[in-house]
Amino acid sequence: MLATIAGPAYGQTTGPFTCGTFKAESAKTGSTTRWTIQRGTDKSSETGTLRSGPRFGCVEGEVLSVEFTSSSGSGFVGLYFPDGTDISYGGQILHRNNRFVLPIQARPRIDAKYRGAFDYHCRLEMPGDPIPPASRADCISLK
Image (cartoon, rainbow, N blue to C red; front, side, top):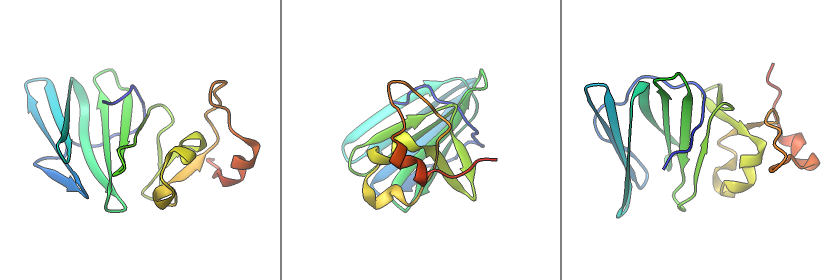
């Protein structure tokens, strides 16, 4: 469900959490944490040994965010959109003014309705997913 990704994560969300059509919950047993995300009849679960989290959040009242830090210290974030699109990142996850700052390559993968809810950076250069020159104008400066 979530790909390996890194960035800051915060404390664990307790109890059921709802965001639009999503319902998420987590439980900890010993050193293992299990979290479940449900969208309609689609339900998926993950289990891991975490340093912190998962922390569930809601963007624009409809996009579920899940952040956690693994026991090795790697941070992760997954964004779950109502249309079924899921985007996960690590290492490039940043927060600014209580907003996620995502790699600019994520922008075209996000429904236009939600693109304005995120800020974008141009720090992640990948040969397989280059940054189109015209997209650089939409990047914020991270100093």
